[in-house]
Length: 116
Image (cartoon, one colour):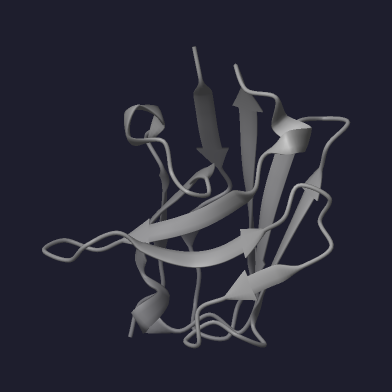
């Protein structure tokens, strides 16, 4: 059974930073591409960042490029999202999942709030 547990969200002022963590189990983690996704009410979940199984090649949505950094630790089955220079439009629930995502494996997510 795949389990993905996100943590590290919170309330942060514009320009601040947060580091999100995701603990994965039930998958062969070091063979999976992983992604961070986010969702705001009334909108579709969007891919924010993606990392290859070996962590060599990453993708970022244009809106976060240069501010967010995705990384992983295959020894710990963890994936991270370092978020710097946060903006109000980054406010969302953030989720991790494989890429492509496994529909049945979405966790609870972690809320990030950046007030305007």
